[in-house]
Amino acid sequence: MDGALPGSRLIGRLTEQQADLDRMIAAEQSRPAPDELVVRRLMRERMLARDRLAALTGSGTPAWARQGIGAK
Image 1 (tube, rainbow, N blue to C red):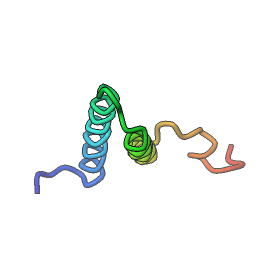
Image 2: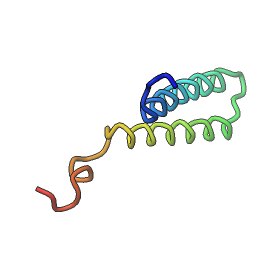
Image 3: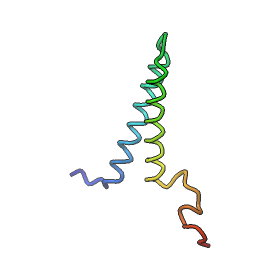
Image 4: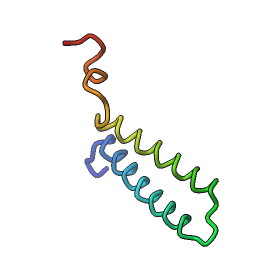
């Protein structure tokens, strides 16, 4: 084991996955006749990776959701 926390490895993998998906989307869109279904599927996967990353890091979550409803 390299000593990295399991969460940090997952965050790294999700960040890499997001970058890979960005490249794949750009490559598909640059084709003369891009397949829109492929582009949509890749964008959906990228959104899922982004949402999982936000959930793990706590970014993109409103303060009220992090603290619990009604917490002051």
